[in-house]
Length: 454
Image 1 (cartoon, one colour):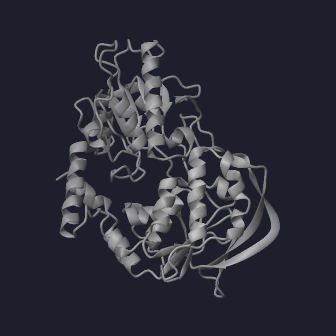
Image 2 (cartoon, rainbow, N blue to C red; image 1 turned 120 degrees about the vertical axis):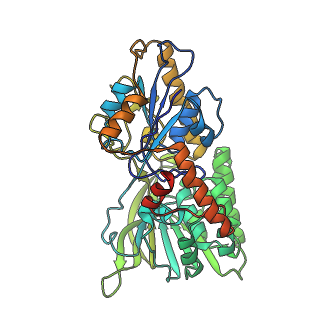
Image 3 (cartoon, rainbow, N blue to C red; image 1 turned 30 degrees about the vertical axis):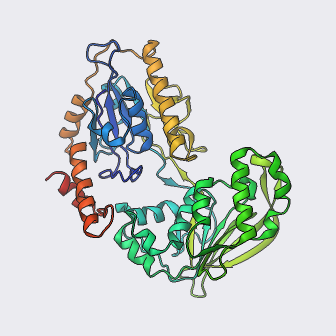
């Protein structure tokens, strides 16, 4: 399979399993199938979903993203904005199949008064700040307040909480940016509350992330025992993963942690944000007003209903982690605005032969990296089945990357090839080595491009 990666936005950065939420496309042909030059497949998306889809289409001969990018049947073209520099219809004319794997780069709005005040951030932007996304390098969060509130109780929310409370010495061992590291070293945040609208039995995080919070040095858990009333009796009927997660939470409630710990964190259940509160001058956030809820129903389907009671929490940092959402990429692609996904059946885009999707744009921003891997493998298998069943016309010879590369050149778009991306990767690793880190990420796109094309 030959791969060409076309990316929406500036140059893609792949750090571990992160792609900095860029869009790109990969071209490929599966060996052994009919057509004089082999089938050609275009994958739009350079994150885990895109690379896992490519990996499966290459018949599992590759086991890492780097090996995928280096494969002789894979061409990577970054720094291309799909939907602007090249349209989906143009890609479909050049390839037998196109797979959309461009992720979820939008934010879900809280829809409450005051959410635009300074001191309020989306988790996507906050994570982008400490992970080195160029678009978030100027975020400069004010960490001079003692209490931070995170709205949402998924894995991203716990990741943010851990970054806020982790000892700087631990963070120095990661590839967190130097700018973020210096800001966190001077942070005054000592208390992080992680707020959810439902109860402990509906929490969205997984046990791995919760265990990392429980084991964080120099911190203790600060829970409300009332939130866990009746939970012990419900344990016996829970599925094993949910049971283990709940038992770990209850253990944290019971033990609390080291009273001498300087920092604390805790879940706050049955609460929904209704207003961000400004200070007396009205210039920035100094608190949040929460509505207290009760549950209607039970289990995963339980609904949060407001009780009419309110609670104000003083805090200087508010991070909304209520979810990412995919956005439309091209008018030619069907899109469900309510669910914020490309409508599909088993990865086949609705009413559009030859167009497929995988990852978050297929199912929504849920699950862990293994979920995306299996989801992407499923889409790739469906695509191969369609080829073998004759549902895709492979008798027509498609030009693939040759046509798209020429098209981009006529439009003055200069792509970043995988070997050029590796120059960026090497530069970051070299800078990190001098600081005793795995890497120091480049934060300026122009600097990345200069290194890539040198």
